[in-house]
Image 1 (spheres, one colour):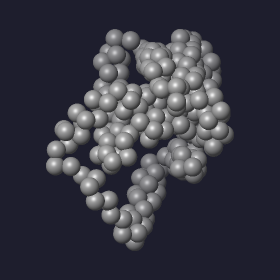
Image 2 (cartoon, rainbow, N blue to C red):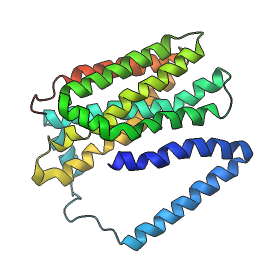
Image 3 (cartoon, rainbow, N blue to C red):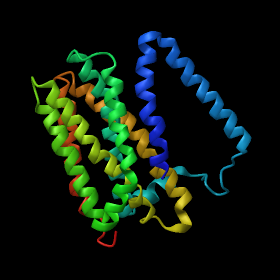
Image 4 (tube, rainbow, N blue to C red):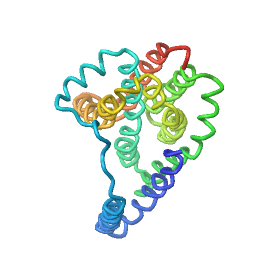
Amino acid sequence: MRTFVAATAWVAGPWIGVRLYTIDPMLVFGVSGGFALALFGFFLWLRLEAPIGISSRNPLKNLRRYFSQPRLALAWCINFGREMWWVVMFNYGPWYLAEQGFPETAAGDLQSSCTALLFLTLGLGWVARKTGLRHFICGAFLITTVTMGIAGFAGGSPMLALGAMLASALGAVALDSVAAVTFLRAVRSWERPQMATVFSVYRDAASVIPPAFFAVLLTVFPLPSVFIATAIFSLLCSLLALFLPRSM
């Protein structure tokens, strides 16, 4: 439900933002800053407070505790893999379109089209309950593996690469609809706040580690190599998903 509701902003933002940018780049920052201030004020009005016990005097102890549990480590890797797709699509997808001579608004259209599939999350969640979490996640990663591989090897066919990137969003959105369940079903209730702190780091790690690796990769290979690398990692995540317990 959270992903389904948030999809409205994720769809509208890129589409509107890229068009505001063509008028005046400052419009983008002004609108974004205005919404950020409004959100900050709303949080103050809510008087939100962190639950007691969510912090720890020794974060490294929580880190060791988290990764000493195979199911939690597996949940972290799976969610890192699905977040990596979004990092690639939002950073290197627009770069590829600009390199291939697409219109300036194409980047925002690509991102909005991909995020629009988030409205399917409720239906995809129903499918996951029917098929089982392990097979569903494995199949979703296989979709991103094949489609991102096609995007990487499309070569002189930018429209084929664009179509493959759009198709890969189906696998990524399928993962978004259920991937967090791998953590929720694996974590012990009495240590959920501490383990949740470690688990949530996958987002930051996916924003830092893949771009750092791609920066090195792009010194040797052209831009489509990023899509091929993403496909390889998605295949690895698909194989890891086979280790999810049958009970999921």
